[in-house]
Length: 505
Image (cartoon, rainbow, N blue to C red; front, top):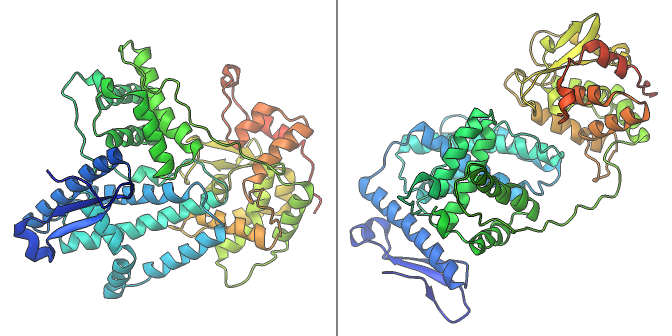
């Protein structure tokens, strides 16, 4: 039985395995050898077993020859690529300008045709495709490989949009995650599943919880996220037998997430560990008689330091709105949609406190009149809405006098601030960059779009607006049972919004 080797005590262990004799000529080598990147013997054995399983599956795939790969499998591979990219960059996505440049590079590939396009896709995504296929023991035929490269490019474009939004400080619900099927089991992580009763395995426990979660109306994205966290632990341990999971195993897992996967303490504690806690809490609530190996386990997360309030100051707000009104930094080289967004998105965000993407995805049909009051409708029909619920928001009189309603009424049907098929999120990111570059609000401690939401909350307190109505207008949920009674009428919201003074710009 092959096992990890070590050149000298204390040095990293190596994976070494002979290539099957019938494949030596085809692969052009007799042995596979590389570092396992650890000097811990227990961890080296776990990694060795995973790597050996991966190569054995790949060798078997070579024997069978190239095979067509179904679209669902290709999309699952794309989802794996998407999640890995976001996991590695989401904690600190950098400056928005970087993602604008990346988006432009991706757009350059999208405009290519024929062989030129295939060559560009192979150059950019070929190594990624090879790694994904190897990881799952797949050997794609030519058509499937081309299809995979094309889907990986589309996935990279979507990942760029998400990271651009996060670089603006917007970590709201990710609409792209929903398009991918459940992750494939990587052959690199062989899992021994128990034949015991379903309630005695993590897999069975999750499936029982999933049925209840669906009955309770829990979002599909949340269920999928929890499944990924549970599967991650199963893959790490190599089994899903609950009685064999000890607290020390949970500690090893969290250490692995921190040291090997480079996840932050906050992400580990509030996402990965929290998902497992929920599973065992559910088991306790159902009197399933299972122990809880997560009990007492804590992951420290350093407190985030703050150097200022998160909302715009009066001076910053006036500077942004004045620059938007004067179209500072706007040029004919920009698309008409971007020019329109720079002129109006800051003004609408300032008076509504809405999320920037909720505004950049507005359509002509989302301007409505209720009881004689001009309003905008924020709805999932137009794009991503964090709560998943539509809402009507009355417009402040200054916004009407500024000419926003007149502008919208003169527009044809369709999106106001982005071309059909284009991304509202990218436009939001570009507006944020404009705030930095041309309105000169460069303080990295304030988010160039999201700060309007914090500012409206401050103004609500300064001018004694009804908190429940303002929360509703901004799309913030209120856990109070009393808030669930009665309707938030446009008349009531308009009465409150009119208490806010004009911006003197």
